[in-house]
Image (tube, rainbow, N blue to C red; front, side, top):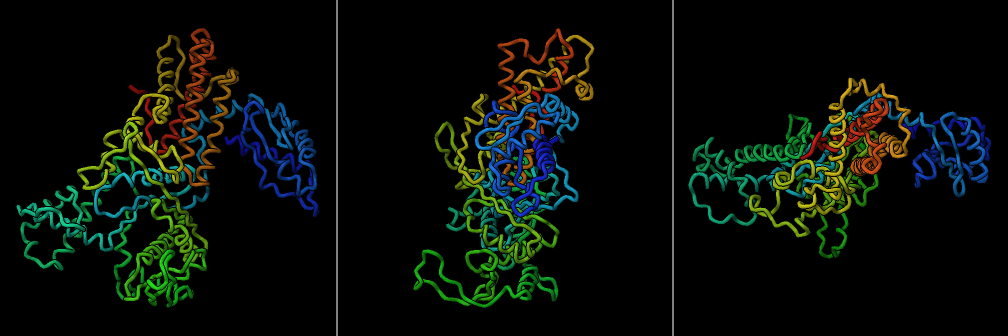
Amino acid sequence: MNIFADFTQRVKNALYSLDLKDQSGAAPDLSRVVVESPRDPAHGDLATNAAMVLAKPLGSKPRDLAEKLAAKLNEDPDIIETSIAGPGFINLRVAPVVWQRVLADVLKQRQAFGAIVQTPSPRVNVEYVSANPTGPMHVGHIRGAVVGDALANLLAFAGNEVVKEYYINDAGSQIETLARSAFLRYREALGEDIGEIPAGLYPGDYLKPVGAQLKEEFGDSLKAMDESDWLPIVKERAIAAMLDLIREDLAALGVRHDVFFSEQSLHERKGESGSKIDRMLEGLREKGLVYQGTLPPPKGQVAEDWEDREQTLFRASDFGDDTDRALKKSDGSYTYFAADVAYFQDKFERGFQEAIYVLGADHGGYAKRLEAVGKAISGGETEVIVRFCQLVKLMRGGEPVKMSKRSGDFITLREVVDEVGSDPVRFMMLFRKNDAQLDFDFKKVTEQSKDNPVFYVQYGHARCCSVLRQAALEPGDAKLDDDELEKADLSLLADSGELELIAKMAEWPKVVEAAADTHEPHRIAFYLHELASSLHGHWNRGKEMPHLRFIDAGNAKLTLARLALVRAISLVLASGLSILGVNAPEEMR
């Protein structure tokens, strides 16, 4: 039950019954009419902007329209009071039975409460992480991995068919550098003194196992080969080893992709039809979207320093980009952007209605070009959505964390997860909007205090489970399974704190919908923290006023109703934590 959608429709029905006409004599557009939580709960349970958004097109004063609408809404038996605030906002008080229905729906739907059903389910591709396969994941990859994974989970909960995808950048000079670095470790594994790692190669110890594997498979035979012969062999083994390492690192963070897509596959030629990039370019030519020309110098570069070269260009500026983009260089080789275009075309051909890219902040200029590609290739059938993740600054007790020795010059993802655990990492990466910089303090995220958001939320779930366990130990024959809790007399829940908890749970479907629509999973983390805070606040009231405690040994029916409330809170917390990829513990030590 989405109480906001329900009452928005009731408000619209009331407006229809008033038979209102705009100044042209037509029925007014009600698309902007919404029902939301009031800014101040003291004003009411719900509020609508209907009079404010309709007054002008109807040629009416907002307050006059509000009075007419309020009178009509008062006929609804589930609305016990209306009041008009300011210039025309209408606040509503709903009958207790409304909250009872919400709670009953949570108990019935369980962790599916708030989920959205879409038929047919839109197909969405979420591409995230996509780091070069040249070493272990580092701290710079953590946020994008968590945001992308949580976003994919959220969209699936919102009724979409979601594919989680990793784009392997396995074509380019960095892969040859990887192969040469691995070959150096191979020589080391054969007993050769390789000395200091030459500049330009990858120095991390993570390549030593690759060298050892090459020795075991090939002995010393690779040393006798020319580079042109051993390079493709070592490249293949090194990429495979790095991908295994990347998968292990991501798994430690609870991230698992459905598809690993190889960039190299876009370049592979298949008979006379050529490569996927060849076919993409031919398709753009047929649409008249490619031409031979030159580009202006990049911003900030003086014209006399710019080399004027004729290239094969894509008319990206026709689709909202700042400039046209090169697909082929003057020497005839493809640009990196050409692979990006062919990759999107592959997504479009796989039937996705949305293609979401979760990128690091250093890719800030990619949004317009990717959106332009989407419009040109799909004709608007596939929407391209780009989300950027700002940097994460690692701290320990307020002091910056030093670099890692294992990787050579950066802190690895695995080191962070191994020290504090996956749950704190995932939750804290989502406890701030993705495009805002984030400080991650190892000490603070492991504190067992209300100042640690992930502990505060997980403790809320564990506290619910503790109450239910304790109730099961109380004398009496009452059962505590979900079927029995659904039979509780929810009308007995009349305390303001209990009703506030139900009202907060009633917001969950709307939070899910808004977070999915805006592609902002941090809204889920914020909401869970608010719900946990409400729970802990009510718990503390019970410590001071024993008659409010969840278990009342002298009143079995009231206890069952309150336990139903506790169970419902645990279900919503568990549902939200599942979207974030965070565990919902039943007890915490």
